[in-house]
Image (cartoon, rainbow, N blue to C red; front, side, top):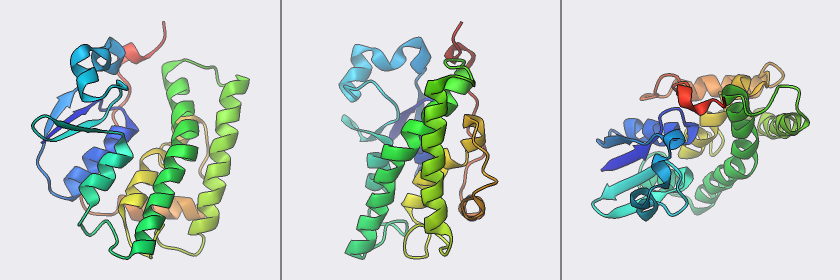
Length: 207
């Protein structure tokens, strides 16, 4: 099994964490997205959209989109509920992550850390406001819950953790969200968690 990835990506971080938690061996194939390595003909044959991560579970078969990879890997494991409704709730929160958290928190973090937007720009402020709305939704949900679904740690928690714990790097203070902060600590305490997400490489910054 191979994973094509750029280590500073939180989307890749999700997948690498799950692989470690499930005890699955894999070969890491680094892809420098800022050097154009994800937009070669060879890489487009693996993912026509030219984005990482891409999983090659067996020779010649490729799966893109981090959450699709998470669902594929979690199938039949302790991190995916057997109950049909609980499974749908896992999907619900993973769709929430890609619709609401990643495009706002992830983009704001990327812009700030790579110098693509100033901290005072209106477009960045809009992403931060949307991030705060997403965190408020999580805060409401987690106020009386240990984890996102069925009071047990699932792949949905890992999925949401990846970007949520990086909120300070996007200019968002987590102090107003105590239930979210407590949940982050519970998720981080799960066996097999990786260390910090590596920083962006030097070529990620705008001149």
